[in-house]
Image 1 (cartoon, rainbow, N blue to C red):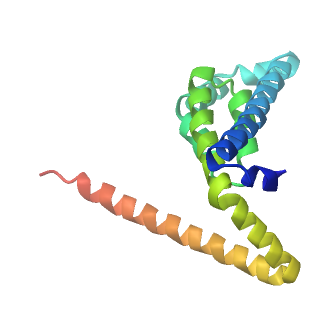
Image 2: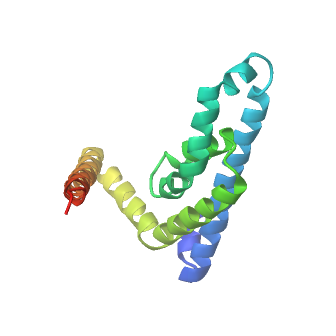
Length: 165
C-alpha cells in the first residue's frame, strides 16, 4: 500500500498519509479516553481521584501537547503517547493541534525520505541481517550523541545566561 502512495504526486501522498495517521492516532487517543472512563469506576476511581494523580494528569494535559507532536518523529512511541493523552483526558483543544502538527510532520517525512529509508533498510536486511542491525545501531548511536551534545550546549547556555550583569 505504501508503495502505491509513494507513486502518487507528493501533495496527494502527504495528504493520504496524513489521513491515515490522523485516524490511527486519533483512534488511539479515543481508546485511551474510553479506558480512562472504564477505570474511573470502582476501586480504580479512588486512585484516579487522588490529588497527586489529578496533579500529574493536569501537568500532562498542560504540557503534553509538544510531546504528542514530537512523538510522531519516533517509531513505536507515538501510539503510547496518543493513548496516554487520551487516558489522562487531554483536552481536544490541546490534543488536536498537536495531532495536526505531528501528523503532518510524519506524513511529509514518510512521503519523502521516511518510506524510502525503510525500504532501503529492508533490502539491506534481506541481504545481511547483521549489517542492517549494525546500521541501525550506528544511527541510534549518532542520534544519542547529537542529543547529548545539544543538551550539554543548552545546559551551558542556560548556566551562563543567569549571571547577574
